[in-house]
Length: 447
Image 1 (cartoon, rainbow, N blue to C red):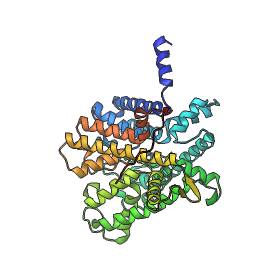
Image 2 (cartoon, rainbow, N blue to C red):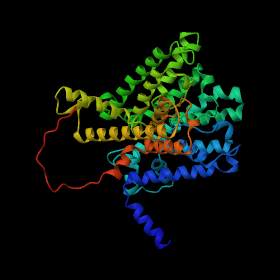
Image 3 (cartoon, rainbow, N blue to C red):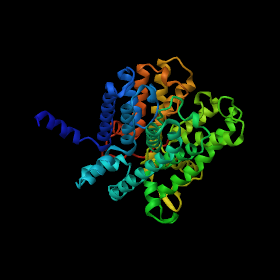
Image 4 (spheres, rainbow, N blue to C red):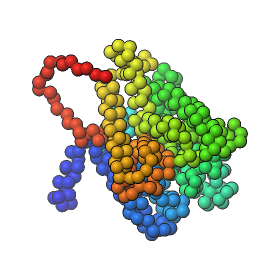
């Protein structure tokens, strides 16, 4: 090893763990793009911008596409996309720990620190148990999901292709990626019972967070679950019915979406799927470009909220949204301490929520500004695209194909930051320093 390489490793090792993880994810995107450019991976010529965008969308488990995954990529290319989705959804450090564990090697304190940040944990304790839970959940869910989806795809495409379609969509669904090998997504299966049960079950389980699943599987009873799990489950239980019902009300007579179905059962089925997929997965069983503007605005809000921490979903996360509401209510009630389910929420957590929300909103507004300044398009379409990229959702009103190279780079950056976490960006903007001087408190008028 040369002196320069040793020096580089020392400098690299001094970086904060979130930045190192971000660099690893960026490296995976580059590797994926190189693989997709191989002749064996594609059926038609594609540009480097196509390969980079597709690889970034897969690693960040977003699902926005600029090429036809099923037609423009070979089975090898589709397998590369599936692998990138799995790595991006599972987490690079989680995968590394699983490999080291299989080889009988120990994970050092540095590796545990990286794993802690990759899983968005506050400590390194019980990480091994959490990783084991992740492995069990991933294997069971994806295998069972593929087996059930095979009943839909094998009769239509044959054994070999049908099984591959089932495996690909099971991986894509559990990791909340939204990638599909079908040109119209899952629109042809809008009323299929198996698809409307299996696909949502996969991305709801994947998007609720491994910490919650670990609590559910290892701790018996509601009282034993952590505050995080309780807030996440209650928040999800409220958001899902609200999004499904709101979608049904707003789109019931829209001829481009629910209005094309004759029966109420079919409309409710599509409403169920499209309502639950919006915050995380990005699959669609109806034409997203035909949505009413009001529905699109509702979708934007859901995409910005996202799923759960330490999950395959993006957004500011449900727990962040709930804590923000609790803090707002506490302010109007003149309460100085936040609490929920018999547990208090510390000031540090509230400040983190505020920082995360502020950075996220700034990122989204900057993305919308850059795209509106460089593209001729409908403001709602652009805002929808940016929100989808930040929430790593993958839904689009058809504007992805209109992006130029600059627009693609903006969306790639937003997808990347949406996946690795806006707080990683905060490490560039903030440094820890012990204050040497205390200043008298000043009066400030707000609002």
